[in-house]
Length: 202
Image 1: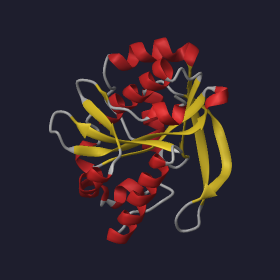
Image 2: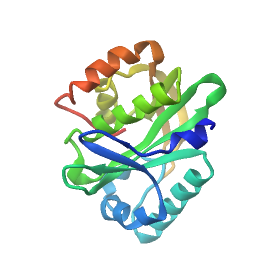
Image 3: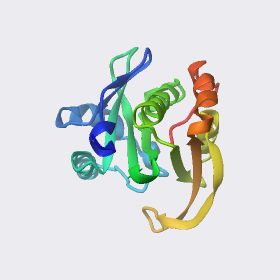
């Protein structure tokens, strides 16, 4: 199987369960997605029911087409949907992909959910898909997400200026981070010890 076919699978540890997005997840996602704070630095905004339906349909379509592996994150302590995270930007020939489109509902921020979910996706990327490089990008203004990426051991590589439009017309400067295969044993060891005091979605 290629990456697009092999990326989306059930992943879990003692803290979180990640499952591929499906139609049955619509209401669980809706329950946590209607929070404007989530979308402050996103390239889409979910502000009302129509926005949500468009957002959810787009995620389902991207997932079904193999352009992204969209995961639903569940907090194993409560069993509730906590948010979502994706594998995307597949460059299988170059053994490169991205972890992104990451967001958490209000009740699940700062609880270590982001940490444990990213650990699962990094393990899947390096140990199953055999990626050589896993990358992340975020808005230069998103200080919390940038701190969160440093906390999981990602290296800041630089800023691509005027990278894309944001809702409202602002041009976003995108900061890129990465973890390389040679760095993975060290990163895995650090992540396995648990989240640092401050963790954020990105």
